[in-house]
Amino acid sequence: MNRLLAIARFIDLMNEKIGRSISWLALIMILVQFVVVVMRYIFGMGSIFMQESIVYMHALIFLVAAGYTLLHDGHVRVDIFYGSATPQRKALVNFLGVLVFLWPMCMLILIVSTKFITAAWAVREGSPEGSGIQAIYLLKTVIWIFAGLLILQGYSLLVNSWLVMRGIKADYDHAAAVGGGGADTEGGGL
Image (cartoon, rainbow, N blue to C red; front, side, top):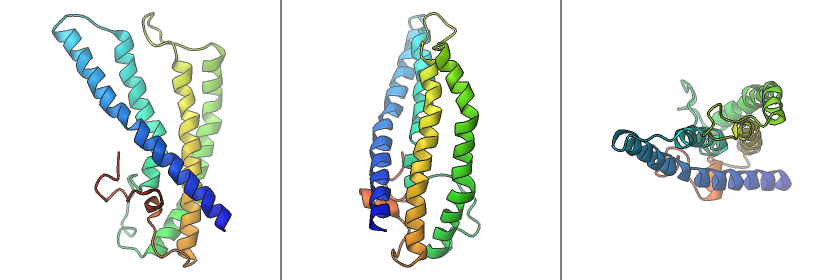
């Protein structure tokens, strides 16, 4: 069990670092958007490359930070019973949620997106605009990264939920292992 927990902690730390790093793209995206607006409405100039970069950054923030969000329990859930449940009950819901919903959905995403992504790589798909970003194939590859990071974070959630259900861990907040709190704590989310 110590080895499983060590792997889970490594995954937590990895997603913590990835999430904190990728969150800087939000600031960069805002600054680029500001420059695009100023260029367009004050100077009458446009940049397709800069406009497309905003879409790329937006996609990267949401797709790559999904594991970080799961680590900090920041995903939206319908918690009619979850919010007031005991830590053991929450652990059971999370344990079953990973096995029944998260992992099957991630596997479906990987399977369905494979043809889509490999076709993009085969032609090195780029922007239809000549001055756009010629790396759509790279952006599409982030779908695999998204699913992979969620599968890994799901493993950590599974291990930590198992420990809570068995009474080995008293609480549910496995994000505390990386020095962060849950999504409800100040500074816990993106």
